[in-house]
Length: 344
Image (cartoon, rainbow, N blue to C red; front, side, top):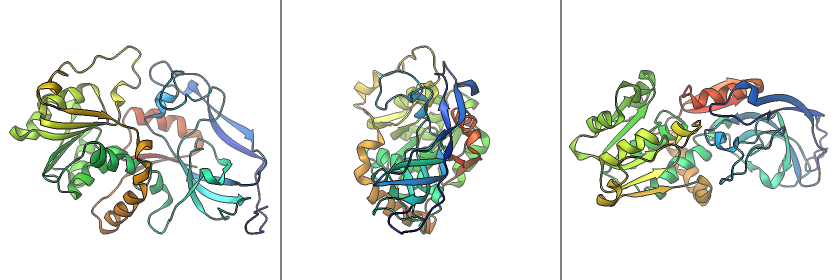
C-alpha cells in the first residue's frame, strides 16, 4: 500500500542482486561475484520501495572489496554490494516520498531496494535524464567540482593537468576548469579515441599515456609554463610526472590512484617527492563526502552549463544487472568513456 497516495502498488516478493562471493586478489574475476535472488523485506513505516533504473559502478568500490580498515566499510561476503543508484519509487509508507518520484540512493547492485525515505534524495528529471544524477549532476560531478575549486583552489588563468581525463570525473574537471577561465587544460587518457574526445570537449592538449613516458609527454604539452594544478585520478607515474612539471606553489587534488587499485604488492611513492619541498607544493587528498554541503551550489551551476552546452558528458551504459560485475572489471581496465552505468 502506498501510504501517501492511497494507491495499491504491485510489490515484488523477490529481487535479484549481486553479492560479493569472495575477495579479489589483484584484478577482480567473475568468480568473485554472485548473482542471486533474495526476499524483499516488508515495507515499514517511513520506508519506500524503489525500482532501480541505473546503478553506478565506480573505481572506489575496488577498495571496499578488501577486508581492510578504510574510510568506507568493506563489502560483506555473501551479501548484496552497495553503490549509487537512481530509481523510481513504486511503493511508499512515507509522507516524504510519493509513488512515481525519481530518487537517488546508495543501495545499488540490485533490482529493487527497500530503504528509509530519509536515505533517498529526490531528483528533478526535467533538468536532465535520470542517469545524469549518478554522473554529471551527482556525486561524480561534485567530486570534480569540489576537487578542482575547493581542494586545489583553482584560479582563473591557471594551467590544469587532469589524469584519467576521459573518465567520469576527469572529463568534467577539464570542462569546469575551462568554464572557470583556465588558460590551458591538459588531459591524459588511454587510447587515441579518448584523446580525440578530450579535444572535442575543449581540452587544449591531450595525450595517450601508452605512447611514451608520461613525464615527457606532459612536459611537451605544458611547455616552459608548466602546470599550476594537477587533478590526480591515477597516481603512480602520473603523479611523479606532475610533481616534476608543477610550478612553485602548485597544488595537487588527490582524488584517486586507479593505477594501483589492483596491486598485490606495495607501490613505491613518487621518486621525486622531495620536489614538493623546494616548490612549496600542496598535495591534498579528499573524499567527496566532506564537500556535500556544496551539492546545491554545484547542481545549480552545472545545470546551467549543461543547458547552454558549456559542459557535455559521456556515459558508457551496460544493459542488465547480470552484466554489472563485467562492467566493473571493464571500468578498472579503462573500457569506459565518461560515466560507467548499468541499466537495470
